[in-house]
Image (cartoon, rainbow, N blue to C red; front, side):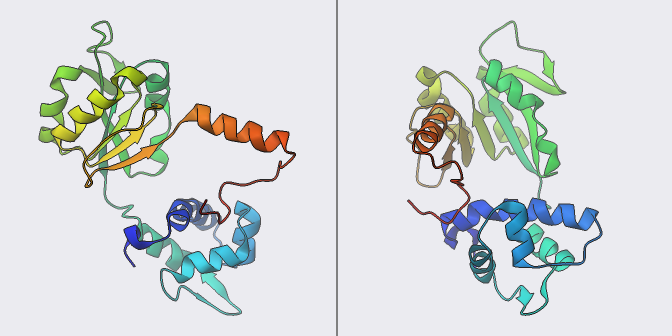
Length: 220
């Protein structure tokens, strides 16, 4: 099954399974049951079995899953062997923190450059990531074959920045601004709104639902 045909909630859980399997391989574990995965990731075991069933016959009843095989399968399915070039636009407090984040845990994503309009930041490096002028973004993306842009700009600049990166050829946007972006249908946008997530967390805490887990199988 193609990744884009999976249920959204299943697609979101696959990287969690992948990272957990990496841990098991490092520990020398050869097989794992859905119950063990459930206990480690706090995901219902029936949900785990259903997630894996979308991908084919990956396990055996009474045995569980071969860790090495399942890891290799997910590695191929998630295209973990393919290096994806990423740029970051907006080198404020959030952008700087993102540059310093350990994206290299996945060995897949490589932030190759950051862009900003502040002349005082241009020419600097953050954790080895060079900061360029926004005016150079389009030519850089086309030259380097960048596929993903992270937007950490002020909300007022979100749409114009999205237009810029799309025009440059970016196909995926990770949007840290609170603005809803208008992009062509062939461009994928994932929104990360910290304020909204905090509001949702407060809502559940006030209702006493402290065990709610966003990784559970909830399409709503």
